Length: 388
Image (cartoon, rainbow, N blue to C red; front, side):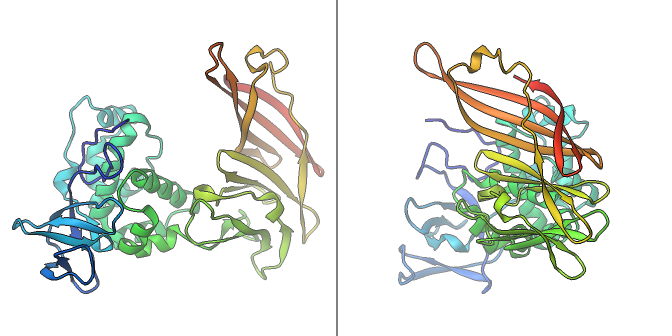
């Protein structure tokens, strides 16, 4: 079984599998200003201590139980409902790592001092906060250790300051931060969305929304509106309604629902307006698959879908590796409008074939495509192999 070595203890990894998480530091978060430590795993069990806000203790998640073992600094132990427990962090947790460790090298490669930046963000320094939460490209061991620092930073920053900062950022920025939060929590002992709603309610209100109308055209006249089945982006949450509307009176300029497959944590997708506000690229994600659909202004009070020709992919006819392989998904993502009529897209394909021994052979193909929108149609002008 795979385990992870995490350098910051407040990132609550379930090391070694379910029920094997080690004791972690916590404190209570309760509107009453205290929480009861009980003799047993029940709200009816005797109260053996009242734990005040700010007191730091050790806790161990209970396997299959909502009541977790808590040990106070005095040594007294008992049980507390998990919903009363909040992770505890201190500035000392954000100390520098070794000069050659993964986060130090990551920072060097981007011209930053990672640890100094994390401490600045935790203190609420505006420039540091903006730069720290823009970190979204860690992977492997770097991502594993970054998650711990990320959780420490948000707990030191707190709900008031974190939400105030995020309220001033673009929707795409906030969604990227939400994705980082979910990655940091996905192997933790707390359920990510419930935890955020309990302990960071103002931030959760920005991150989890049932309706969004933030995708406004450059000229301010139009916007894309989406309504979701649930406020929280859970696995089965999906786009219930998507439409392009006029900002002044809310009239519907195009019904987008049939073209929006958004579902799960990335249900919001992305919206890219052309510089002249005459065209819009709608990117929706469902699992590993994703597609981009283009709409264009048709007259003064309507947008219509642009049909794009199927591209001829370079080298495809002679691609021996794909012979007999099965295409699993295609992911088409809009990158930018190069001009009001020219859209750059990235097309990523994942295929599965088989090696001689019968094992799965994973095959990826990535292309950069230029689509030119002229009249009511889209023509693929150029395709380049980006990676294979």
